[in-house]
Amino acid sequence: MERQHTETGAASGLLPGIERALGAAGATRIEGSGWTRLTLRLAGSRLTVDVVADTRRPPRGIAYLLPGGGLNFAADFFTPGGPDDHNLAHLLRRRGLLVVGVTPREDAATAAEITASWGLAAHRRDLAGVVRALDSVRALPYAYAGHSAGAALALDAASHDESPRLRRVLVLDTTGPYTGDLALRAAATRDAYADQLARGTYATDPGLAALISRAVTDPAGPSQAPWPPDPELRFTHAGLAHFALIRTAALPGPANWIYARGHSAGEYAFGATPAGDRFALARTPLTTWHAATSALGSGLVPTALMRDLAAIWAGDGTTYRIAWERIRAEVVWVNTALGRGDHPRGADLIRAAGNDRVTFTVVPGYGHGDAVWSRTAAADVWSLF
Image 1 (cartoon, helix red, strand yellow):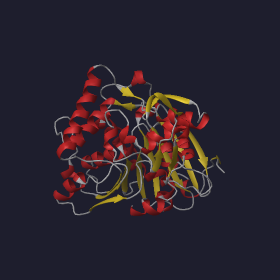
Image 2 (image 1 turned 60 degrees about the vertical axis):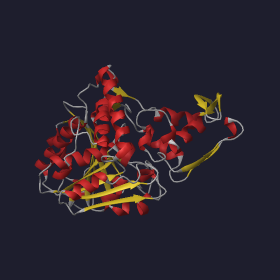
Image 3 (image 1 turned 180 degrees about the horizontal axis):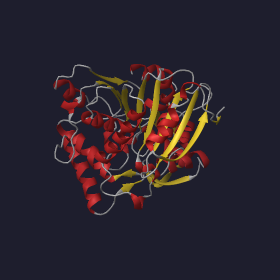
């Protein structure tokens, strides 16, 4: 049971110092069994920083958690919750780390506030400011840990961070440069986002939160999406949400092709009518997807960020490039077989530059979101960290 926090134990003194160093404009605190969570809204920026601290012992290091595109800390790393505290933030907290979730600026922004300058470099500078502030409070060894777009940010931040206290980069289901035909496809995706920017489209809403909400509140209702066996008919809301999660790569859109199959492991079989479709998620229940997407702020993804990510996928060093050769910290890279798949080129480039502390693993049977939300992720995925 969470309740309003009273500072105790190992968190006493540390959290007020962090709050002052970050120049927080507002703060809320909750307390759980042996832990406390401080949520800070930073003055002068749209960043939100969450600090999850153990109240029984002082931290031996810091883990900066960087959420995926359109997500925030609460959705990506503090879900699922519940009495057993089963999420990645608590796993790292139990390992003796101070967990610092850095929610990107777009989570608290409207579409009208997002500009063409909100690319990966802007996100990296935002993160660097948070790291400097916490360094001034307590100079602990630290790691960058990111999922999806947040994992690309973790790698990019590591390539610009020369601090000897940066020890590890934990990369969860992202892609470095592709090769061959996929690199060409990534270049076309980069161009599509560049065209959107040129037309003044600076942000998009992937729409997943609304999709899942309708599937939960009105599962049998007709959606607006054509049903593939007969385009004159429409998916049910529940059918569409499950199809989008399981077969993400089959959906239209400039970047859905990057998934080997989808966001979530599962099976989808068409019936004689949309109401007769049969589907099931294998690892992450729809209730967890709903809890995660319900925790979102704007849910928006800056177009400039997507352009920069696509440039990385394409190996385009002119538009945006991660300096792989400058990453000297240990890198633990874990992809999912159904999500971003077996594409180790980024890890290979880091290793080729002389960093021999690099591992790349692909976990079978997991989709992109399962890596953070599945009940079995602790054993199958997080244990690799």
